[in-house]
Image 1: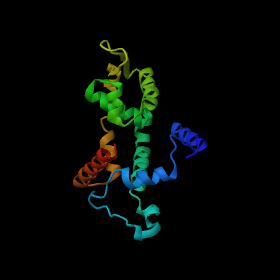
Image 2: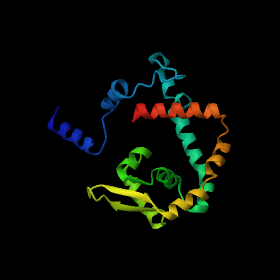
Image 3: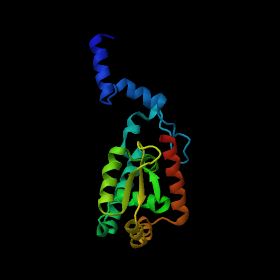
Image 4: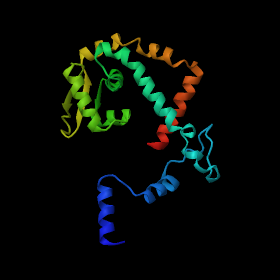
Length: 188
C-alpha cells in the first residue's frame, strides 16, 4: 500500500468511514449472528439479490414500527410539552429517582450528545435536577424533582392508550418484547 493510500485510509478511519472491502469483511465475519433467532430465514448466496430486497429485511419493519409508535405518542405527550425521548428519561427517573447520566444513557441507548441537551430541557421545565457527584466531580447525576414526580400521575394513562394502538394480545406483546430484547443484547 502506498503512502497516499495509507493516508486516505487513515482519513476515512478518522471520519468513521470504512472501505467497501472492510464493510464486506465486517458483515461476513464480524457482524452479529442473528441466524439462530426463531422465525428468521437465512438467505444464501443462491438467493442472489433477494437479500437486498426491502421486504426481506428485518431492519425495515423494526424501523417503521418504531417510527410509527413514536408518532402515536406525540398527541399523548404534546399537551405536557414532552418528546418521546424526554418521556422515556422520565420513566427511568420515576423508577430510579436518581441516576448517573452515563448509566442513564446506557439504559436508554442514548449517547451523551443526545442526552445532555435533553436533560437540560427537562431541567429547564423543572422536572429534573443535574448535579456533579460529591465523590467524583467527573460524574454527573440526575434526579427527579417534586414537579417531575407530579408529572407521573398526569401521564399514568399513556401506556394503556398506546397498548390500544398496537393491537397485540398480551401473549403476543410479551413475545415481541422478548424477541426485541434478544436482538438488543446481540447487537449491543
